[in-house]
Image (cartoon, rainbow, N blue to C red; front, top):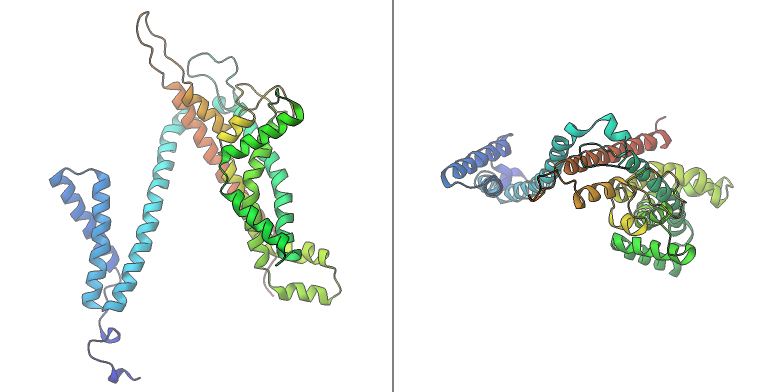
Length: 365
């Protein structure tokens, strides 16, 4: 069909909006929302909602009047996607700014290296034991979950594809994805109580609980990455006489190692901030304990440290007969510990990306 045969009102012959039309409409919507806030006394949340609604309506309407319905629908969907992106980023940025603003002033080398053993009410004490406990328990969980999860993913993709056992494993992995974290902690605690007795408070118990939470993420992410490896690579390896297990070890896994490492890092980030399973499995210890196999002593972690500071704050000294109010020292320590936890997660993710790039197969001629 030629252009001359199209009707004059066709979307193909209509003019387009200016390149920066979305920015113009968004700016105008923000100005109108601010004016309504000043005139009607609305809060910032209401003004933001009104600005979003105005932007969502104005741009498609302008596009419909100028470009036609086809482009207006495209503008509407694009605006919805950007609105969803901004809506997600607002609480994320808010949390980061809040943690940085309240955590940085109380972050120091003494705070990072000291512990809460023999602590008296005051600004002293630190998270040294909590950092060590977090790294030890998370490392144990990773050592347990990664080999099992990777081997399970290899079975699902390479050996059991389409079998009843593979379908059953996939079903139970999906069920495990929705298990509450405290249930994993109760299971690990009950298991170790049956084996070692009721006096068990090993850090290994918490490691097993976190490994249960890591397994579904490791399995499903590794499974998807292994499925992305083209079958041509496998067939080429088989054609050269290479056995199946060596093909998996030398061809399939190295090809997908970048995505596998990323999935492992996501699993670690998922469990490193868990509080409930660690409290149930190993409790909280104010002092330093680097031995996760010691049965009579728990381990501190950053999440349980933050919870303890919030649940049992220091009380400021007060005169006789007056009500003693909680001091701000505990909350200051909690905010600083939260900042350190975020930094650890960020470092782990950066390390995972670097490792994935180093071990990923090299491309090029």
